[in-house]
Length: 83
Image: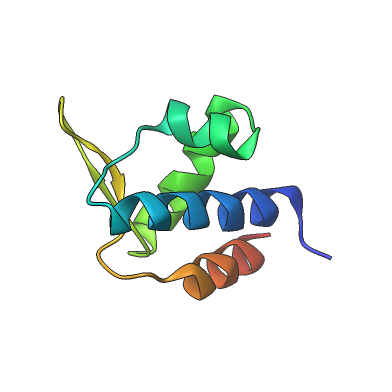
């Protein structure tokens, strides 16, 4: 059984990975809506994933979250270790 944070990390990673395949960056509000999680909680989870070099966050008007490579398994392990 995964924690809520881990569950949201998995869902967010999958959503961001799909968008990355289409060369789209997504903001935290869009990700939180897609995984049905509070924005602040989603932001905290995404911050951990970026700190662990699982995904990237790009600042600015054309910014957002993006994967260089699909690393969903790493996002799961990062949230499990953190929990």
